[in-house]
Length: 352
Picture 1 (cartoon, rainbow, N blue to C red):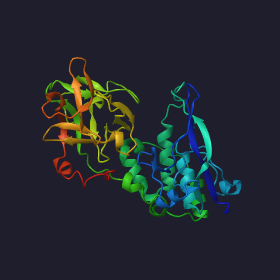
Picture 2: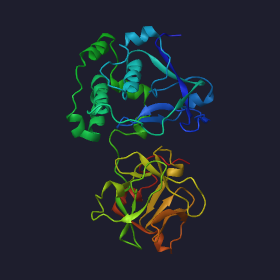
Picture 3: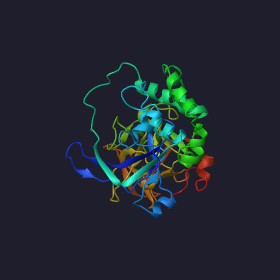
Picture 4: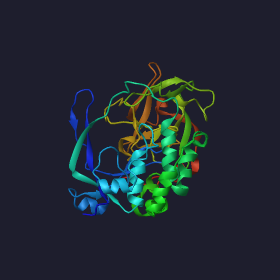
């Protein structure tokens, strides 16, 4: 075997509270979006033909991998300028691929990991170490693609000093590592299809206002992941409301908190089905939404179910669509009528 081959296990979940062991699905290829959130890409057809065989993966999840000590130190090890955690999985993944190596995920190798349910301590640094780490990785390895990361929060990145990266740049020069464009076109070649550097415009965004009760808008109620949403008094500005009421029907065909990573998710098929906030997975399914501007209905999934409400207890839920029910009618702050008219051809490919 080539000593420049790195192998990563499948990472299963050990519940932090009950220690229940939950195996993950049958695998996916590691990736990232342009906010540097770790993401997953579907397996390639060649990988599906031999589901027990290791498959190439662009990015590791981090922390769990097997690598030749010789190759690890040729790459300079971890960048010692990265502080605490965050970004090291990208730095190592990029330089493995760009500097002559390969990286595989091995389905027959599994490691259970306890993901803590909450942080028992605060940030040990007063500075924003995570942004500094990300910018440090981008400056060394991402070439012109770094700008797509920076434009997500230009002011924050412009004000961040990465420190001395002379040693890291020298390693890249010494090993004659390939440009990041090579990584994007040969290794993560399908990443931009799912996570484009420049996000296409939303189908709709802003506040979601009840037509029947125009004083009420959908609101997160300051809730987080795995919690419900509800109704609250509408913001004055429906196009640019406060964060709790700022939603987007994104080109992914999901309904998410604007500038966030939490999506409306419906897993129940019962009447008055709850809507929970879950991490956006981009796979449609229980996070698939569509707006019908003529009926003024927000439709969930593919089974003709719509956003409904109870103005008395200020709850929202999902029920079979009823065009005569005024409680199922909603108005967005902004609607991109041209993209909605091209629903079948605009945005992410519809998953059958």
